Image 1: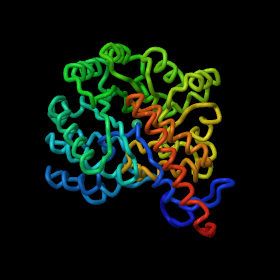
Image 2: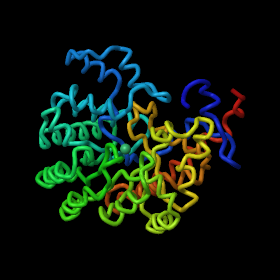
Image 3: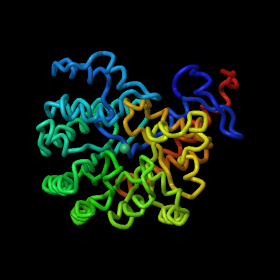
Image 4: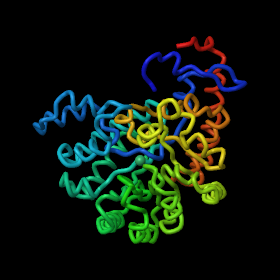
Amino acid sequence: MFQGDAHAVFVSSFPGQGVVNEAFFLALPKVELHCHLLGTIQRGTLTDWVRREGLAVGADEIEAFYTRGDKPVGVLKVLRLLEQQLLRSPDDLHRMTVEYLAAASAHNIRHAEFFWNPTGTARDAGIGYREGLQAILRGMADAELDHGISSLLIPAIDREAGARAALEMVEWVTAFPHEKVAGIGLDYRETEHPPELFAPAYALARAAGLKTTAHAGEFGCPWQHVQTALDLLQVDRLDHGYTLLQNPALARRVADSGIIVTVVPTNSYYLRTLPPERWAAEHPIRFMPAAGVRVHPNTDDPTLHLVNGTQAWQKMHTDFGFDAQAIGQFMHHGIDGAWVGADTRRRWHLEFEAERQAALALCTNTLPPATPA
Ligand SMILES: [Zn+2]
């Protein structure tokens, strides 16, 4: 994907609007609604911490962490390594937060709502919720000051830790409320950990006035998981949701509800399971907007997926064929899905749209047609 002949990859055209290049996707103002803090670990930071902890993780293995495609090491394994052996102090969380938000801001992400799993941080790294929270909040404030990026934190249930740990995590969140902690999420391996297990945790979160979102319909998991997330967890937003397409009535319902579905063009499951030559043509993201689903592209685990905030959006065009109008809609979906006040949302719709138009005018018809690779 983003390897090889950069010119051939980055330059393509919007039908009727001439040539558009990477500069457009970079200039497009964006919000990010689906990114996991540990999945933003910079290679240099990880290398520093491996050295600091004296771990027997060689350069080859680190190289494998940052290799995509025929991936020798799964992303979840790297996330667990971080929780269990590398994160040692609240300052580590602060560093990751600052580095993530600085990198996001460099790709013109203006506002980020990102996940953090307090359960693993407490259980494995020995950093309690309050300490961890304060360090991350400090990082968010520093990044806003230095880069102008606003952000909200989404403590996420580690579904592999089970229902009891989920309830405990929500109790932590409600015990230490903060305006920058807008809601909760649900992530890690969905297979064998269906959403219904977490209904009590979601009920507690809703009762405390928290917003909710959940990973559902990832890893080829049944469409029923999406339905359960809507009916039982009563989510305000949905993450992935790809298998909803397998049930036309559910797809219609999701479309009619107007709920924002965060999607990940670099999602590992489809990279693994679809043949490379048919990956882009058969990927469910290609078909969700046609079903009326309001999607919004995201980086998920950017450094481990070898993708940045610009490329996640550009892939919607180069790989899945969405035109300028659709890209504009996705941009507005992000604003509608953000857990910010109505005034902020209204202002962003106007400001982002003006900037999108300016970026389009600047970036189209200014380059020669792409030369064949
Ligand atoms: Zn995710």
